Amino acid sequence: EVQLLESGGGLVQPGGSLKLSCAASGFILSGSGVHWVRQASGKGLEWVGRSRSKANNYATAYIASVKGRFTIFRDDSKNTAYLQMDSLKIEDTAVYYCSLGWFDLWGQGTQVTVSS
Amino acid sequence: DVVMTQSPISLPVTLGQPASISCRSSQSLVYSDGNTYLYWFQQRPGQSPRRLIYRVSNRDSGVPDRFSGSGSGTDFTLKISRVEAEDVGLYYCMQGTHWPLTFGGGTKVEIK
Image (tube, rainbow over all chains, first blue to last red; front, side, top):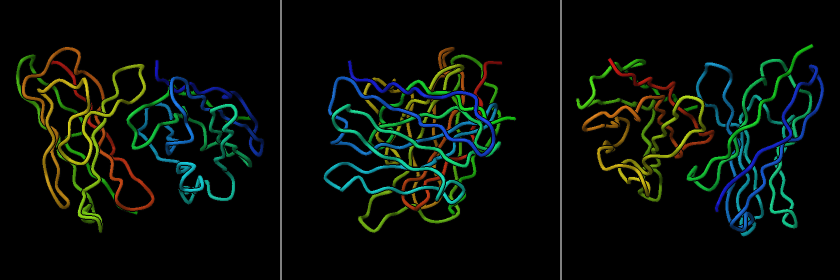
């Protein structure tokens, strides 16, 4: 079965770091772009960033509010994409989803809570 | 950033009746390659989003044909020809033409 599985969420203090994983099964992730999208509780969807496919050198792009703090990278050997989140702020609290290609496949999401 | 404005915010519908959601962008969504990168997503309660429509009017595999997308330029519409109970949830449009990608605020479809 083709699916994406996120993990790595949790509770972290402001200023802390967290690394989210997006593991692919049933297909080779390196051939596709990967997006990260977040959703604060009771709020809408917000695009966070993306990594293009291996053929496009995994080029990344981010929204302004996370640029310099968040990094998307890949590990082909693990068929996994990651979202490294540093200098976390309270307003980063949300469910984080990874999504494939042009959003044709989504993971189940992982909760990130930034609180003291 | 391109602002995506959806209306209505809330849409109570009678089962079997049609529903329509509007999505307007602050800039044209026609890309230099001639394509329009406008997408529609459904998010049922407690679930992840699911893509329904890509590039304005192309229905994804497994999506019932009661869902249809239309529009051009800055004005787009998602229609449900006959609402069923399983259609309850939030619906979002998203533009993929300009960076950063941006979503509409969402429309909540509920049964009257």
